[in-house]
Length: 232
Image (cartoon, rainbow, N blue to C red; front, side, top):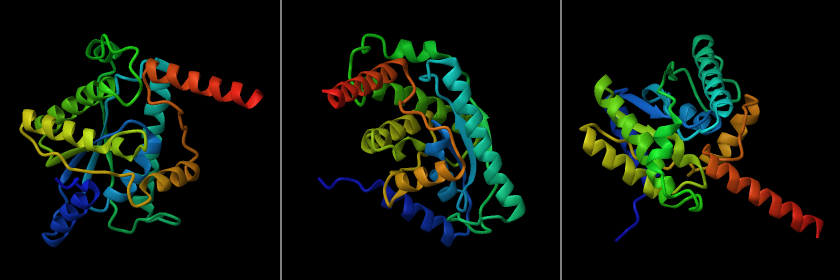
């Protein structure tokens, strides 16, 4: 069985919209500003985007606050560009559209409940899938309630996230909610590289862990190990 090319599927969808001169409404689940940067730059020419910032996996209130503030700052900057037609150094033109944002409920206990018993699993395993399900099911629910044509997530831009799993989870959530999921693999075609460039351009806060206390602890162990190896 051939492996699906989610990046190509997204391109094909966009081509269909362009032929029909359509700009569908897209609810874009966002995990943070750095991951959003390229996704928004790319998609805002083809969709009417509303970012959905829903991340109960960010289990530190201070970390959550930093990320949501940066997300709003990035969106404000993109919207300023649209108003002033100022796309210098950007991969966008005057077709770019303004972006809205919805901030979901912040309740870390929801994350702890769905990942109970998986505390010691490594990042990238079943605990992460449960986290994806929590966030994308809520995104699908909001997309259905508010009448968006599609929903998707910025999470596929990360080299540490399995795009196949994320697309499977998104499609399952769409079937349950009765709405449409937009396939993606934003890391492809230098998407991740571009997100790093944009993060530097906008001086975005870049965290070094996914968000939950478990991923943070794992990252701290990895950094300590690297430090000890360097000193030995």
